[in-house]
Length: 128
Image 1: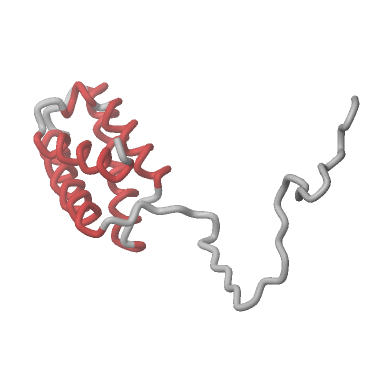
Image 2: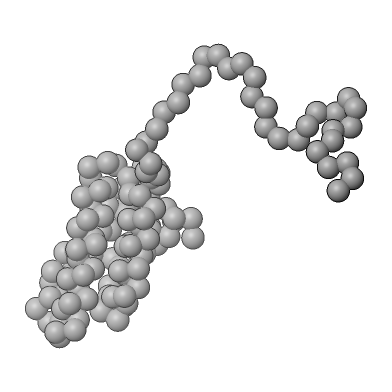
């Protein structure tokens, strides 16, 4: 291949070049990324609590299949509430699991306004 690896006279080679660096600090977050928006996080936490209360009321009237769905959703809601309370935010992975649990429980939660509120808050924090 003709001219491969050659840099024209006076031009710099392509790539990244880092010279001397002073006064640098690097901070890690244990490889976690959270969605930080205090007002939306607060809204989600309140909606989660309200939906958990509604689900507790419906457990007595749900059929066997519906009861399994309610329990699964309640577990995800409890985990999300714990994370929101302890860290002040929910990770994108937690929000995605909560969104999926809501979708799976759609037939059971279709008439619950609090389920819609949780879904909207999750969507807002995930950006869609």
